[in-house]
Figure (cartoon, rainbow, N blue to C red):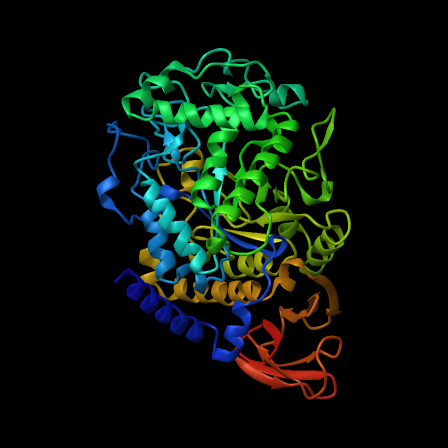
Length: 553
């Protein structure tokens, strides 16, 4: 019965896709499905697990998390099943998404805090209590297995979020971990290398002693918890095997690495986004990469029928305030650190929003191509214009949703769509404090009922699908063809070749395509859905749009 439902869902999904792609032939669609995927050109959808979609209301209330919270500071009901539901509905496929990054799903502290923001629970996932268990507010192991399986069947990769450098805050229900595991002071000052890593990020966020190589015992509260849950012996047995295999000391960071890499070997996730990278010693990330690569190889060996492709395990780092202009290096002021080589596939690019605000589109595209095809060749950056903790997004008032899509999805590098970018979800929520205003519930009602929201979404879908169909968009070589009446450029990667144009005239647009397409060749304008024939090195696109996305047939 389940297989029948899946087949019907996929048929419906394919049907919807054909409508969205504006008459793209089934032959061409099948060709696109088999196209190359590389992380350098990925289109990643980043969502807060608790805020995206509630697929199972029975898990909304758990662990007596009943204190009245500040606005949007408690659990709202979003869960793993809710994400799976939207995959099955084809929502991500229609957006051209090929990877989903979820905020951490490990069990969060049971108590609440109030650090000037109103009472808060760990709804966001970054306040770990037990790395070995999925928080019941998010779902179960079975839910995660189902999500990964269904995502992979739809050509979508799954990224989880790794926190290594801190536990959750201390509360009445959540005692501090032992002193050989964590430091509780001083607070970071962020003025040099030392006072950025050997300190607590904020008050009451115990910092894991990632520099330690001393053997430590399991925290007593974790031992008691595991015993009460009837899994202490199994957890200890697995830890013993891990330390025997690796030869690592039983130091705090290696326990956490073991727990995090279990999600690779057990569930087959495709990558991790690593939190607060610059707040731990850089050797931690080399060690983490080694363990992730080993776990991924073991998963592929044990589950050959479940392997999605031959790509390596993906690691993207959050080195807060890293920008692509720094190339491979982040500058602490007194020390520069390369977080790419033997550490990360990619880094989140905090600079991108400023580039888009301050530079002409032509200069942004040229700059990114120059760096990614030279100093960062073989690596990438993850560009974003909105995120969960950046209080200065590119378009906080959501006045430029079309430009946001165009620049994010057509710039070289990987793209990170923050949930609700594609539906202009409000980033200004009255009554909230701090980053809670960025984390409202996904605005599904607007998508359902508002014509303007549907128009915005359609734009994101067209660009996203084009990007997903062509790795050349994010990972190809960029060449400007013309900048006289708008900007026309090509992107080439191996046999994948496209031409795009933005800010073009409405109506007739004559495009010189001779550098990419041959005379007599039939090509598509993916954006307007028109079929064109190249004549004397040119095509004429007559559409009511100021954008063209040209691809070969």
